[in-house]
Image (cartoon, rainbow, N blue to C red; front, side, top):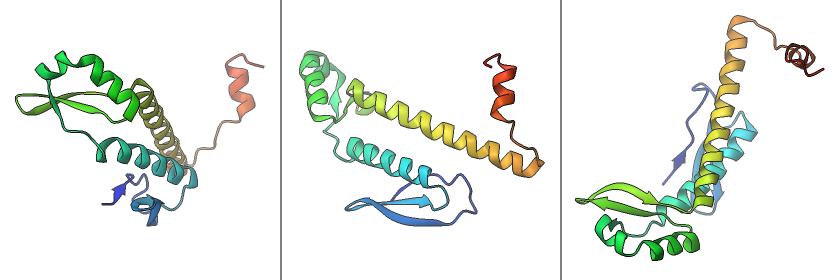
Amino acid sequence: MIHSCRASRPWAAREIVESEPGIPVLVDVGNVNQVRLCIHINKVMYTLYMSVTDPMNITEARKQLAAIIDQVRAEHEPIYLTRRGRRVAAVIDADDLAVIIDLAEDMADIRAAEAARTEMELTGEQPIPWEDVKAELGLT
């Protein structure tokens, strides 16, 4: 299975790299930080979603809530809860969720910065010097 990080630049060169043995990742070659972040995100996602325990019915989960919480904290694997045979929720360790949220925010920041660079290239605008920004915000 190849995990893919969405290309922020469709024309960019892409290659398959192995983030760890047996987990190939398709990434943009151009941005080293994005490659590293993609590899880290894929490791986390692979760990969380490829080693998932069997889903549990909500009724059964209510009876075993304390044990479920202990299990996800110890094993760092989410437990999916189902209603009428369909996944409706997941119990996940709070620290694991914080890591996923931080990674998603980092990726959003990287994409926003790349979009800004692309816009600057298309419009010919120049970056605003840091000293000007600090002065405008009253930080000097």
